[in-house]
Length: 377
Ligand code: AGP
Image 1 (cartoon, rainbow, N blue to C red):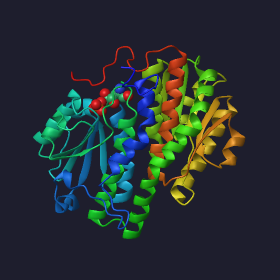
Image 2: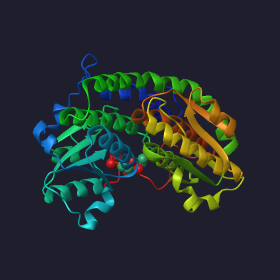
Image 3: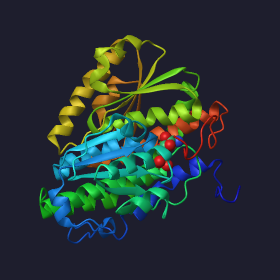
């Protein structure tokens, strides 16, 4: 087992560090840097069907559901196609209204999650074609799907999903870009730029792994005895807040909640006091006006937290001096287009959860009460 961990103390840490390769391998062979084209023939759905699709229905559980929530932003923004995201464990129990032109998309690391399989069967029974994003070739969900985008993250052993998640985000970005190309909602120039930006992501993740590990280790010293955490984000960053909270909950057993930053004043502000760590995702793509607007709103949400003596840890873009003045701790990540930022943002959150759990003496790879894949409903 020690050899399988390749020198790392835990599988989770090894898998966090494997993310640059997982993202690279998920992109490999699926894009052309020269033309910006995305190739996803493995989905086995004709371009005509993609053009005629009325909507995408995503069903997934846990971390894979968070990827789906982020995928909604990618698909709606690039391909202008409406996306519904359901918990697979809820989908089949609400007698969903299925449109024959809707496409079902199941996202699952293992491909064996019972609720996700059940949601897929419900979609098929209601006349939808289903596609899968899955990390295990030949897994149950892929056998019933029309086609699968395999996330080439390699086997994930740690119960807490890390590299499978960033590979899912990569696959969803490719899927959104592919749909946009087929549906003609994006120019060739925009495609080339986004494919080029995607190719830079693995290098940026490497940079983050090098730059923030010590800082997350030190933050763990300060915050490992906290009993509650809040994670805030807006837009596509909100699913990453949810994922940061889930990582912390499952491996450190600290109560944590992810919340949309703008919803704080509708209730949760009442929770803030000088003992509450609040992790705020406050990144922006300076070339994207909608991203800048969201960032500015998030800054005012942060001010509401600091005004009530909450202890803010901000995830921000390198060189953002404004935010440093406002908060106690800032973790910096490199700049990227808005839709790719989630892949970068989640890495420090994984490391923070990891170091806190280790300090609390928790069994990081095998948290209590959890199984790697949930094969019962
Ligand atoms: C993530 O860290 C979890 N342990 C869990 O939420 C997981 O993502 C969920 O059970 C879904 O699994 P799947 O991706 O294999 O379907």
